[in-house]
Length: 138
Image 1 (cartoon, rainbow, N blue to C red):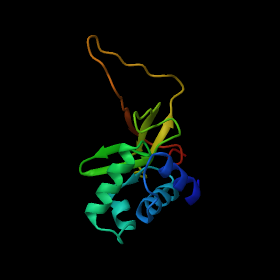
Image 2 (image 1 turned 45 degrees about the vertical axis):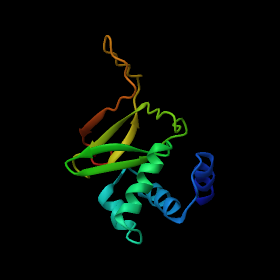
Image 3 (image 1 turned 30 degrees about the horizontal axis):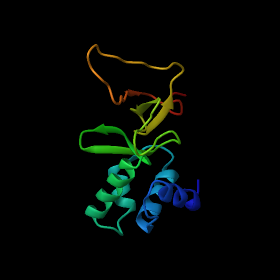
């Protein structure tokens, strides 16, 4: 994915392809795992906190990024796959945090996980796992 891909994606989701939005998406892609807010803030020093917060919220609302993990006061964000839309995030994956290298990744499950609760309508689910990733487990 390059700047043109993200430009088209933003326009398709009825957002302007502003410099901060494109810059953020490119930095998140380069990070290669879910990016913690502190790293996002550090890499986006050129914009103020309010603009950064609004940028993240707009991208989440349009199904472009999602909150992958939260621990203490740190939120990790990841770029959504192609199935997410502004109407509904569709994440058929698990969020895994490595306890050694601290990375958070979106991982596919070998089986579909279906959760239901009688008399409840579930609109979204999120499963968080912790352990040692394949790179650290050697």
